[in-house]
Length: 367
Image (cartoon, rainbow, N blue to C red; front, side, top):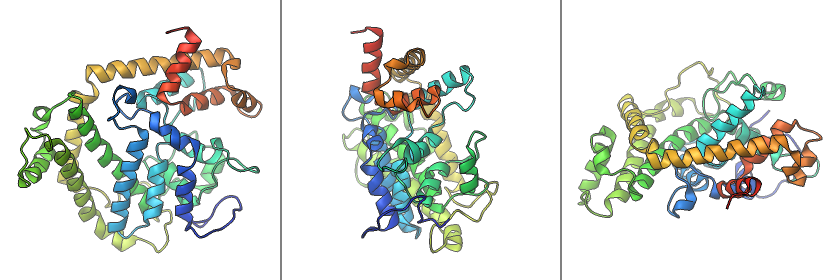
């Protein structure tokens, strides 16, 4: 199947295939709900915090920059980036992990996996056309969402995925750069949010070599750590360092092997590709991430909020599995064609943080 082809007929217009995909994603309900889904910080505690929506936009911006500088398809990289988090549950990764645990505990061995859930949102859960489910996106976009993050092969993938997508091969270069753009975006904006809300400060970070590189760039601008603007310039410099290093370290391989149209890579998934950061920056990036897990992601306030979110997901799952009449009518209708556990988990995964909390309070009689 060619990368710009779709699984169902469609009416052509003035847009290129991947721009049409982007528009379909932006206008779907699942994309709008990302505005009120947690990235790391519970978003209703402060208007400044990133959400899944703002994170997706930042990933798309970085992915487009990488694609443009590396001669790849910007629109394809953008739509993969905008779509990559559509399957996330409320309350960040802990919500998805708890849903996965609960499903497996009840004997549903496939559990919950957010990458595959994003693919299901695009191909099954969104309903915009009479004769089929999903948004009818191009093959390249769907493959990029399914395979943007290794490993690509999951035992529970149904037969139609194994038949239509080359799981033994790397995806397009556009999908690969989205995975790296995701990493660049979240480590930089989590530092920004953490400092803004006094969960960490510069003293917590100044021993990190990657931060030291960014500080050198900021001080060249004549800005000192005690100035209000320092945080903004620090984050911008960190992103710039990571983006430039990625481009410089990846361009030779990509320029040598890129194709006129985006296709699944000709490289086996087991083969390591020369796409990514330099060894030095990669090491410093990993060290900074490990450090953030200790000083930021395990901060008492974040852990407390995430535990509350996890408990909310657990109680919603238990109640809806016990009584199907708690489901909206549209989901009760789906019970005729899908297993109950999957309908319930799809419903919970689609919730925003505030809607999940609202339903939890309604069901359990809390103020």
